[in-house]
Image (cartoon, rainbow, N blue to C red; front, side, top):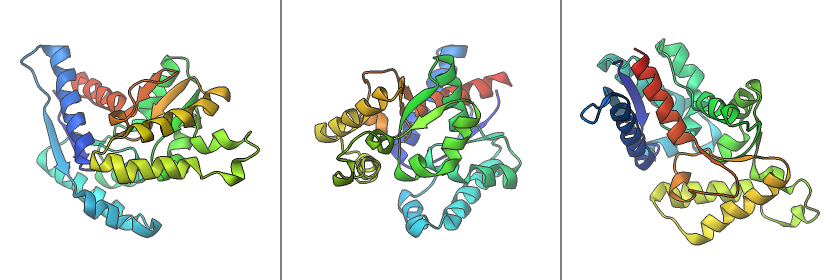
Length: 240
């Protein structure tokens, strides 16, 4: 069994889910008394938030790369970034460490295409929804990513309404990151999905590892990137 290195803490709640799902996946494959050979470096989420404040990702890149170096020194044979947004620095991790990185967007693309979903409604942090690193990687695989902001395209009153991407980001960063789940916020997600389905989205992507606390079903199939990413890590681990 190859050793997986998890870079977590962003947030610890979703990182705990990664650990659980990976161990459950190994047990399902090898037997009930088997568990994953895994290492974890958990970052201080407060330091992560401070490092990326103001839009300068260089301090965050250094935090992430340094954490992954610890994993490599401890014996990790691949890296799993337990956060969608952290994949904004995935290229730096790969180039500076020389270890394979299991990319969350690749795990999502595999599942979307396997299910026949070429257009997906993507919900994540404001950065992940707007930055090109995720959208371009999916597009290269033939998957089009629609975000709640795209749902305003045919709304004549859109200019008078709050930006739905910003509302989604606020819920993630101010509520879900603290473990707060409300029915009001659940409705915001479901209401933002409807116009994207009208535009052709055939699946809803939970593109932030905390969203699964709030959304577990929708009017279209749900693709949870946390579960898909963890499953990809298990497959890589057992291929060895």
